Length: 205
Image (cartoon, rainbow, N blue to C red; front, top):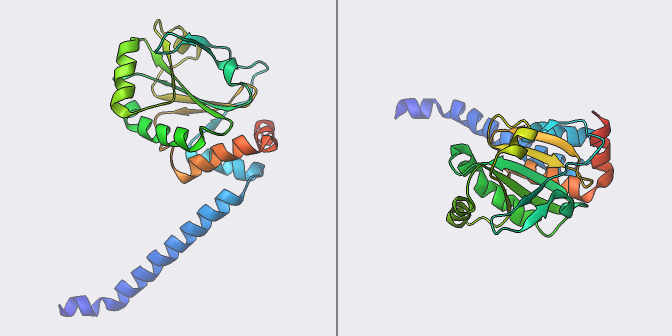
């Protein structure tokens, strides 16, 4: 008991430091949300863990069936920021990140944003069961032969690409992320709401 009281000054210092850290974090998050220039976007890409990719001359062209047998083309989403995710039902980290993807989808689905996933070499029934289990509502396309995955050079899953409003890849992520984090939401909101920001991000490459 005496030792506890003797340590009060030290505990007080720790509490002050923790509170100061929380205040700094709050300020950092607020400041981060406010920045929409190229430097701010670069910072957001880095925090979320997105590797910026120099955009190709041509947009990505993919046409696949969804789990209900409907043909879907990425060109259908022109004018939207596209979150393109490669995955499988047996991938443990895919199972971990998909609930956060659903939250991001729900947050942005009414804006110029589309979440599209491509399942590699599994059946429509497997994908449907998975989506029902996790209550997922975003678009799921099927790559039954793995041809599209090979075209993208997918070597690990999950792998995610970010496409600009013209359908060109501007970023990629290897491995899972917390897609419903504040930084992630801020990144996509800025890409959606400010074309100039997206353009300046591309030019920085």
